[in-house]
Image 1 (cartoon, one colour):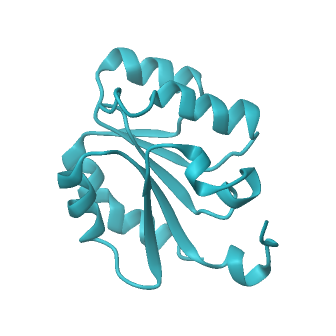
Image 2 (image 1 turned 90 degrees about the horizontal axis):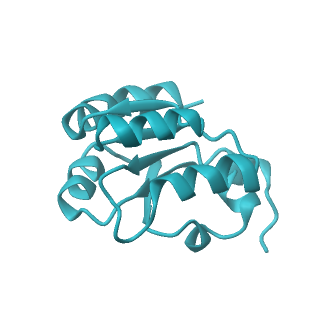
Image 3 (image 1 turned 45 degrees about the vertical axis):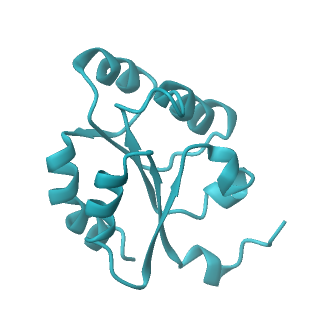
Length: 127
């Protein structure tokens, strides 16, 4: 396990959870160094909870149901890991959005809105 250092905490990394290559490419096109987009379909691919804690925020595809369950992801983050990492969701219908709200996801966007808003989030979380 790598030690969480100040330098590691200052890295500008984002989690993207999706298998959709189109949205992944569209979001990646908004990102320039020093930002880094890490695309996964399983939180365990990121490492232990203290590794997840080092990311600035998460972009979570609510239309993805075959590779992972978005509700499980938010429950693991909030209840098991007890991490208050900002989670910006995109896609999905009102039912899944309502369930995600109850599980403490932060914001909800259409796919188009997510691509349009990402530059604002990059600026906001550039500290």
